[in-house]
Length: 367
Image (tube, rainbow, N blue to C red; front, side, top):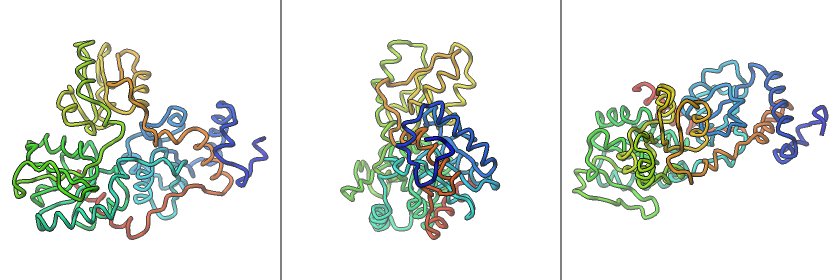
């Protein structure tokens, strides 16, 4: 189909799968130039290069949402990430801006592990056991509804980079924290503050019970939601041991969404942005085994050929939901905007957005 014959009613992602890559790339550039400042494309670090190359801004989820809020001239913000990221961008941007997710099936399995009904059940149990001594805190990798729950119950959000500071803020207000939805980030953060493992328990939303209770209830400081990242969950202690056996000089750098024993065994751990900075600041000849999403690790290896960079576990697949956003879906979203028919707009309900913004702003004010 010639470009001049494209109409909003005729396009679909499937149609663009028939196009050569160079034609799709050329069309993306044409539309970007035509829309100018009206359009901003955001690219998460875990995106494939075929999409990442067109991002006006790159970063982790919260950084991108904050950048979106700063683009006052843009009418359309195309978020190449996953659903909860686009929700956060919609919460932080103005009503006259439209956030678009190129593929609505680009979700997050971790975020889906905690829904609002489950969290309300958990909260009823915890308030029955502990009274008003608990602060709810959610990782930004969560739905708008969970952020809203934290907002209206005196809680806040956190990122993997500021989780430690947010834990300290929470403990300055209450005796305990309910941490959602990633068990591992919560445990690793609490442990970094010197909280013993036996003073943590796990809430299982399927059984509706506290698990791994190793002390008296009144001594529990952190209640961890039983959730995890499907990518980081696959890095194991044996992988750390194996890469060190192969090369004793290699440094192991992992994301704090990894299991506690993996983080303890690693040389260093930190957020996506932290991992990138560590590699950027390392001298030539440095050797890294990195435990995080494969697209990012491969991009770092390509960008820094003066270093040896490999994935901690070679069998790890990309984040499958993140990778649903490919070049055909990106082009479909842009072509739809160009034709005046916005596809996949992300809109958070007003009341949910208001309460979720409270949780986000508490974090931003105390970061």
